[in-house]
Length: 443
Image 1 (cartoon, rainbow, N blue to C red):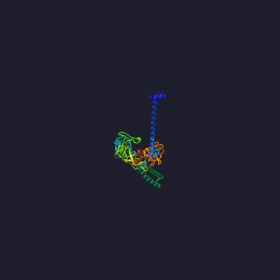
Image 2 (cartoon, helix red, strand yellow):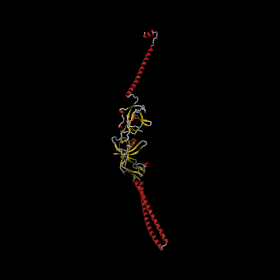
Image 3 (tube, rainbow, N blue to C red):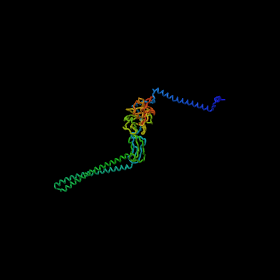
Image 4 (tube, rainbow, N blue to C red):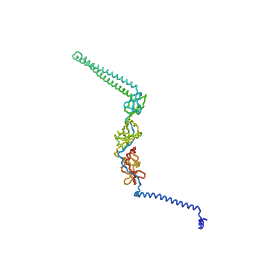
C-alpha cells in the first residue's frame, strides 16, 4: 500500500488524487522562474545606475550631458584658391564674304595654321567684273565732261575780255558824241551777259570736277570689292571652322543674312575665364599670378596672370568674373578646354574654421552650437564660406576661440547645461584650412 494513502486514510481525509500533485509542482516551478526573472531585471537596472553614479563621482557629481567640442580658430591669411575655369582663344573671328559669287579656289582647311593676310579662298564674280568696267567707263565720261567744261570756261573768259574792251571803247565814243547812247547801252548789256557766261562756265567746271570725284569713288569701291574676292586671314592663328568648298555660292553680309566661310582663332596666347567667390573677390586683381592645369596633362602646369576683372559681382551667383592670360607654347592647350586654376591670395580677414559636422541647417540659415563660459549651449546663426571637406569656413557670426559642439543632436538645446569634452582627436582645426577648397557653400 501507498504510505501517503495510508496516512490520509488514518486521518480520516480522502486521499489526494495524482493530478493535484502535478499541478502543485508546476506552480512551484513558475514561481521560481518568476523570482529569477525579477532578479535579472533588478540587476539590469542596478548596474547602469551604479555606472551613472560612478561617472557622476568622476565628474564632480554633475548630471549635465557630455558633448564633444572643438575650438574655432582663425584660418591662414594666405590660401590657394582653386576654381574651375574655361579656356578660350585670345582672339576669334568669323570670316564672311564681301563679294557675291562662287568659290573658285579653297586654299586652307580646318586645323591649318595661317598667317596674317594669307589667302584662304578665292571667289569668282563675273558681275563684279562688269561693275568694274562700268565704273571705269563712267569715270572716263566724267573726265571728258570736265575737260569740256574747262574749255568752255576758257572761251567764256575770252569773250568776257573782248566785251569789256568793246564796252569801254564804245562808252568813250558815246561821250564824244560819235555814237548814240543806245549803242553804248547795248555794249554794256553785252558785257553783263559775258560776265554771266563766265560765271556759268566756272560752275560747270566745278560740277564736272565733282562728277569726276564721284566716279573715282565708285571705281574705288568696286575695286575694293574686287579685292575682297580673295578671302584673307585677319591675323595669325588656326582655322577652327570651314563651311565652304569649291563651287559654293556665297553672299556678302554677316550674321544670319550670310554664310560664315571660315573661323580663325589665335591660339599662341589664350585666356581663361574664372568666377571668383565673393569672399576672395577683393583679393584677386589685375597682375595676380596663377597656375592652370588640365586633366589631359596631369604633370603640366601653365603659368598665367590675371589681366582684368569685372569689378562687380554677379547678383545671382555672387561671384566676380576674372580673365587670365596665359601662353600656349606648341599649341598644347585648345580653346574650349575645361581647366582648374590655382590662385594664391592674401586675405585681410581670414575666416574662422570649424569642423564640417559642427553646423546644421536652421530656419533662417546655418547655425552652430557654442558652449559659453558657464557651460551653457547657445545657438548662433553663421555665414558659411568654402567647404574644405573635414572643415568649413565661417565668414560671419563666429569669433575665434569659441567652443563649438562638433555633433549637434536633438538632446543639445539652446540654453541647456552640458559638460564639454575635447578629445585629442577632436582638436580645433589648424593650418589645414590652407588646402584647396571646393565650390562656395550656400549662404
